[in-house]
Amino acid sequence: MKSERKFARVVKFYSNLLVVEDLESGERLLCKLRGKFKKQGIRPIVGDIVEYSHIVQNEGVIENILNRNNELKKPNVANVDQVVIVTTLEKPQVPYDILDRFIVLVEYENLPIVIVLNKVDLLSQERISEFESIYSKLYPIVKTSALQKIGVDELKDKLHGKVSVFAGMSGVGKSSLLNAIDENLKLRTGEISEKLERGKHTTTAAELLRISSGGWVVDTPGFASLEISHIQPIELRDLFVEFDNEKCFFPDCLHVDEPECHVKRLVEKGKIPESRYESYLKFLAELEEH
Image 1 (cartoon, rainbow, N blue to C red):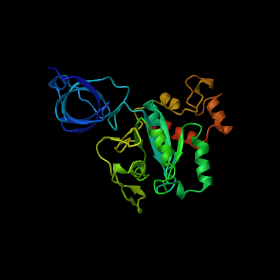
Image 2 (tube, rainbow, N blue to C red):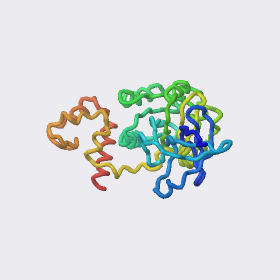
Image 3 (cartoon, rainbow, N blue to C red):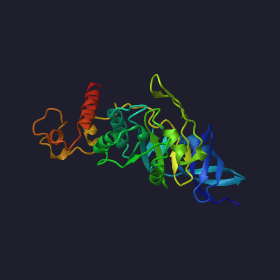
Image 4 (spheres, rainbow, N blue to C red):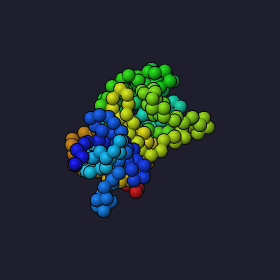
């Protein structure tokens, strides 16, 4: 008798075996891949939705891999709903242009962004307000402190029912935040090296973790590389969502020294934050040099 096919999500890999979680029952199974996948050079990745047949107890075999809505390369994850960029202004002090670099990479992948400003217990209201004045019109911001449990419920709401990738510099508290959201995760957290004020990498291969309040998070170093050389200069300007590129006199205006540049006018009027424009110029120079 032919086993009924069911749908599941790939959550983890063990060389040629994969752990899947049934979409209906939530049951976890260890599945083998049929030989046809190897012959065709097809390999599922974490986040894939697959069809499987149950064999015995908690074992099964993968029959089919469904088409992906999207796929991130680093980390290699499929069907991501959003990227949560975690940043801090103290311990470590992450420069705005680093945050902007993460934003550009996620915009390039065309994925929704949530910005988490963590360790707000270390900040004055003035610094928080300055940060919000730059980013709150562009993206949802959640202000958190893993230590003081500030903003944890709001972040849970943002993650509910979604597959979220956490990204951000080492040491900003990604693992601590996830542990605050769901203590059953028990993720290892790296102590910040006071000397370098840079966290040690604590997370390795991509894995989907289920949050008890509903939703999934990818436990991985997030965007492993902040390299932007694959982006064309003309593409870069579209990744700064507040730039009104259409209103410039020249359709291919790069907003540097072209006449009748609408974007530069917006910067002069304070409608586009100077730090964002400076990040743009820095990245543009990097790409043109490349």
